[in-house]
Image (cartoon, rainbow, N blue to C red):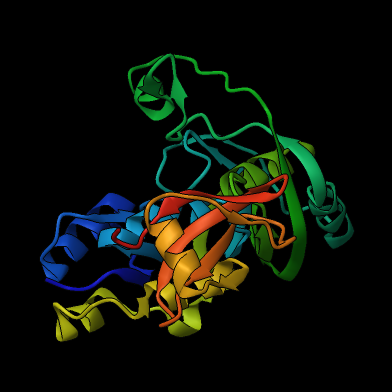
Length: 293
């Protein structure tokens, strides 16, 4: 069985995030595998996978900022807001100016209230929204406050009645790039959907270190490329603990606060990851304990 840690996977198109988790379970020979933020089947790119104890770190990965390269097609709306769904409306986008396209995309920058795509994994009264939509229901989801810190236009390609716009986006967790495509299309009154989506980064994890499933297959079962302590250092502040502090933490006890904004990782004298803690008053209390007592 493989060890504890994270894997940065370059997810292929056509697979669900759960499909990737299932494949890694088989390769790593362990059931304890999870992912740090869903990618749609159409999407490719960075999917952070936790193995064994590192599955407990995924809650901190899920909230990280994310970056994407995407293509928006203006002139067609689909039921899913991406290329996987059937086209439900068309309008010629050929007359749109570059200035109008840039202005509509500009409205998506910063803090915005975004209505998630109806065909999404959000639960409505206990059932996934996409299941309700596919069952013929009309689903109205509440808007959510998200932050789009960067949205750059890389290119505008005119293809008759449709216009393809390549963009680069960095955004907060919970942002739907499909919804950006839908909303820009609505602003321009021609409709829009996503035709390509590649996640290029999750927090500090980038495509540069991502491995394909074929590459993981070649090294199985040693698929973990970021052991626990190294993984934690990548997305959390850290603090070193003495041997006495390590003993206290291993039993779930608090440390004296060190004035570090949390959550943060505590490393033992040997450099191993002991716990993730958060300070409240004069105590640093563990949120998760990873060291055996």
